[in-house]
Image 1 (cartoon, rainbow, N blue to C red):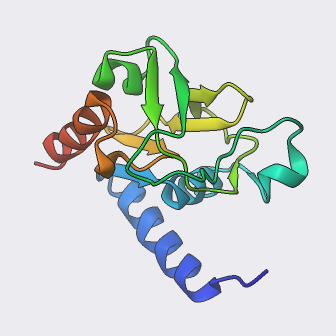
Image 2 (cartoon, rainbow, N blue to C red):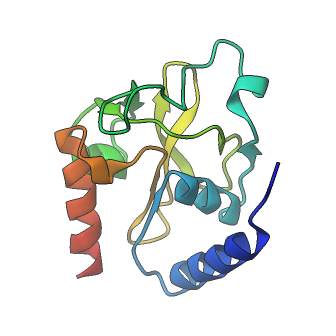
Amino acid sequence: MKTKDGRTAFESAILKGALKRDMPVLGICGGQQLLNVVLGGTLIQHIPAEVDDALAHEQPNPRTEPGHVVHVVKGTLLYRITGSEALAVNSAHHQAAKDVGRDVIVNATADDGIIEGIEHPRYRFCLGVQWHPEYLISPGDGRILDAFVAAAA
């Protein structure tokens, strides 16, 4: 497997700097995975090899269509933003958060148990989602982007 060590080091440094300054952070897909690691978590390196009966997280259909549903935990930042307990999402990943760091909250999971969203309450806006809300698959996606922009204003 080819890794992008330079890119990972660069993105990690930027993320750590943003968190140190309590700047709003929205980690999308690989950004959520990086956020999880920076916050002390670990990764599933390849979902099909590590998770029995896993969903197709690298969905075969176009990314502009939903691939599966995620279940949002009530009371979380993600729930407050989206107002929904379930979101249809696209899915384009083979890695995922495995264990989360101290005080990190899992805010969304897929039916197979894969962590699909995380957040950290210590920061004013620190949210990670495993899908791509920029495709606006559901109304919740637009709310995520709007909340991030509002937090950054």
